[in-house]
Length: 395
Picture (cartoon, rainbow, N blue to C red):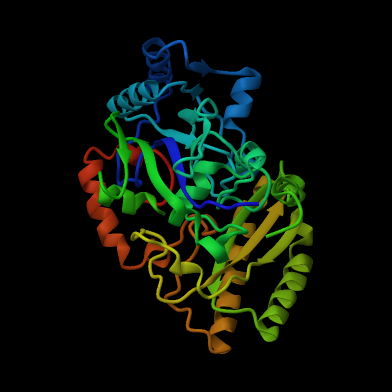
């Protein structure tokens, strides 16, 4: 199987989330009016749904705790319609969210009570053998991409389990089965097709817009498709859940034993609280994993030392225990971080993985010294705080 590590994604919405303190309407009449205005203004290539099977699919998330009942679900079919919708949303200061694969565990990061934008209709997969690039739509899962490329004997640096969306993994950084050889997913991106908060479309590359490009860059004998499908994200779907994380420089025996101890403790402690799964995913990589980039990126905050994410995932069924479970993941993450430091690991300033970080993680813990640069880019690209109407980490 030949490998190429160049990826182009299209029709991603927004850039970096806006700052805190943004005025967002909660008036149902205004939100409903926004839905109706979008429906009236866009082309027939798009659809607006208020209920039914399509609506349910558009708002659904892998973790039920990340699903919200949106006023409407909008499926744009063209780049122009994405821009039209964003302009109307901005004018009405209406809450909205953008969903790719729906694998976010942080509540409100890709869900909303306002306008849910579901990118499913952006499903293009175009392989160019001359340039060794593939253009990939923002509504796809990595499963789709792998399956489309397999007949060519080609591959990309994408998700490691089934059901992961192209857009979210890429914008978050992206750890792959191929990261040791080729780096993070963002290290392989050559261009982004981006709808800006003002509704205009731009093609973002290192040459055309280096600031935005920086901000957006957040072998087996088996079939790669089989490998990914064997690692399914659906085993604990349709339950409530939360991620948290610790970045480490290694997994010595003493640290692995500490993980086992934490797993045993929390499995018993949370049993009366509707827990379904207590999971600690050990993810070792080569220490050179951050050395494959050819252009600067917002994530990780520092590439001086290779660090490996430990994914902490707690799942449960009862909504009344949400806060308890979230606090438990924070506590166990702090315990394991302290243990790693006691074992001599210099991880006090190690960047945490965006896609695993719990919703109240400080920005500096992810982006380090890049936070100031990202704040300046946000002010330039989104002066009206349109992206502040959506969820996510706030600059």
